[in-house]
Length: 469
Ligand SMILES: Cc1cc2nc3c(=O)[nH]c(=O)nc-3n(C[C@H](O)[C@H](O)[C@H](O)COP(=O)(O)OP(=O)(O)OC[C@H]3O[C@@H](n4cnc5c(N)ncnc54)[C@H](O)[C@@H]3O)c2cc1C
Image (cartoon, rainbow, N blue to C red; front, side, top):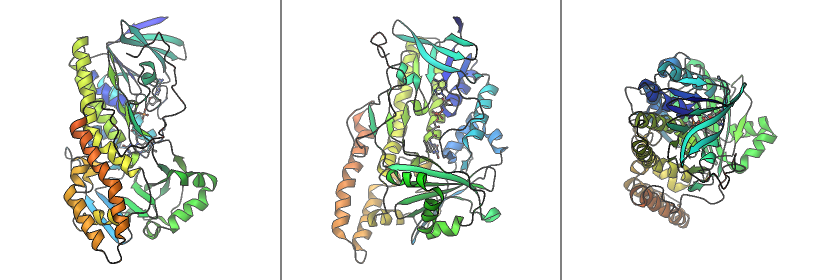
């Protein structure tokens, strides 16, 4: 079999893979990125990036290429739920004060070009079938392309191959050490914005009767993505009766109706309920799992690509400095994984809490109302990752919301206390996880729900000879 040797192999060329390749290639290492896709290639995603995520595109040199696609740039976040309205300008990161929402076939092709421009070799239509091991260490991969099988050996193998990660299975890390079922499903389609040039300069959230609908100015300007993040049980109805169910969704949400009624050039509807969140063990001797391969959370947080790119970049930077020494490299990979977890735990639990869709409760409504009337960044810091979520929706704010909800005329106080009894253990548990439980803790947190699933099973069974590495 053909064999070649490089410095780093990265499996997967989208967010995590391209972001990891750039610093390694810029440091002069020989980096081969393989992907079974041929770009441009689409993937299941609603692909919004707020400023904290857009800056990652800038760091990897992809932002100029993305802006050439003429995406809408949204400077505000708005939330509307009956009489409740919140409107905030996004906090700025690295001089970037806007969100974008570029379809993945367009976006990811630019990421691949950024990796190439940095000096990485990207091989499309190439499948990685397995890892090569020596003395308990991962030392390469076995690939297959149109010309057959070959092996590539390297000091570091990065699995950036998404949720169904073959790399995770191959290194014995397929089964998450913590995970949570998602009660939410996503239903979405593109349309021509009926408001044309008068469309608001905002990512908009419209909540009504258990629906949480996003209206996301997309790419090119004038094209808009509409996403209903609804109960998973509601999704089959959309699949059975597409247009009827879509029309009913608009009808029960008057503010949404005013925003998108009469839109034309509707794309077909896409949907998924395959959204369990998880953490996998993400580093070991000679290997690391970046992006969704190692960690996934409810996309309601709009942070998957940001985290994949940020921790792809940080993985590349850490490895670039320690590639020469296996002991140093493995220590750097472990430290990288711990830093990723510390940065993502709040958002993971927030996503888990949000994955119980339902009508807005009086308590939640009053907590949200504490953000109304001031357009400076605050609630939007949750999506924008300026602070941990529990520092934004903090105890003082929760108490204010609780007092207002209890004092409201006609308040059902029993229902409010019942809700509080469910929410309090989550509040305590997620703080405990972030501050006390420690790295790779398996201690359950009340936000997590049993019954999670990450697919039909490992894409490749680990044989007894192939012990986890
Ligand atoms: C419904 C939905 C909506 C979402 N909305 C948002 C959002 O609005 N904002 C946001 O930031 N995030 C969102 N996300 C999350 C986001 O899509 C992911 O976090 C992101 O795509 C992760 O990037 P990645 O590079 O880790 O993996 P992926 O994007 O999954 O890329 C993995 C790559 O690996 C390749 N690959 C896989 N196996 C192999 C193999 N054996 N050999 C070679 N190549 C292989 C694949 O071809 C693919 O190109 C959403 C996700 C879903 C499911």
